[in-house]
Length: 386
Image (cartoon, rainbow, N blue to C red; front, side, top):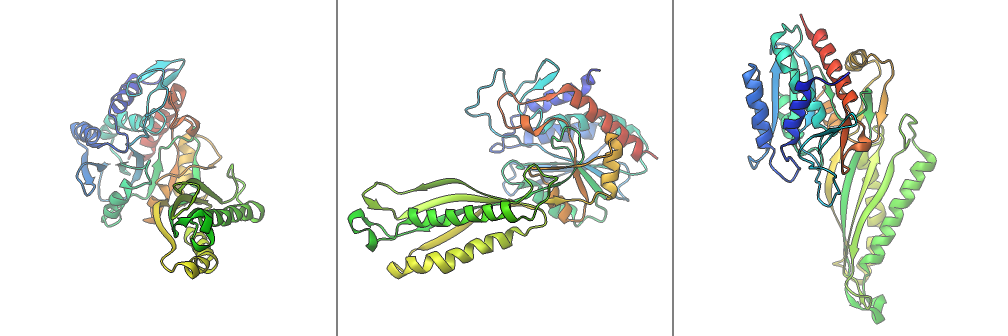
């Protein structure tokens, strides 16, 4: 069975917009707004502070009652340095797949949603359909926060949300949260022959990283555990480190970045507070005995909460019905779901494609997944109809 040509054409249109997170997404958003307007769908654009990016929120059907939201991000990750066998901004169809940046993550889903708009707008809906398209998800779920600050105060907001991130059309009810930090270690420089008179920023960074490693080992050994995840415990990871200028100079500065990928049941602020206590009680007193101006500084890179939706939630039951499957899953990667759930909109994740294909050169989505997604959305139309 082939995917509907209209769906593929819409996916082609969306992928042709280079919405890498460093770029504006307004050209795509303007296209979507005009397309929805042509089908009598009222929309609101919720821009960022610069006016160069925007979220889009719209409703099909009556706006006096809560409906179901279909949500997705419009930005994609860069193609820089990747070895693509075809133009990443032009869809290539071969061997039952659609190749292109964002085909999997997640313009395949957005294309399916938009291609169904004419049918939804012609249907008398007892329950409305909401559309939420965001920006800058790939760089820390940044854009949707602005949209949610508006949606949470609306007289009527969605009663449930389905995010179309790639789950191979399985219903995901949970994912881990993330807190990413950058540490700046300020030491005291001197000649390496006089090392005890200096404060070695690299070595103190190494001690701090060692503590993070011990935290990670403790979670792996002691939990808490949730074996529905591939990695059933919270993880702690140090990803980058830079410091020092020459071997014969005690380094004055060192910077490293680390993250907590935490189960929804764990508080990331408590994890971070534990690490800071170690710094403040064990490392900084030693440093300041030699030079009072030394120490650690921290800045947050990004953070998003975990998602944890009950198995018996109404949105879970609906999504399982739409996929015609009884089971649910939990996913390793993060989404905007935890943020949406924070404003009391129960959320699940279900979309075409596999996360294993996301962010890679020659990213693709199987056409069979697009077919399943179209069927999912058509069943949703039936459920929302009067």
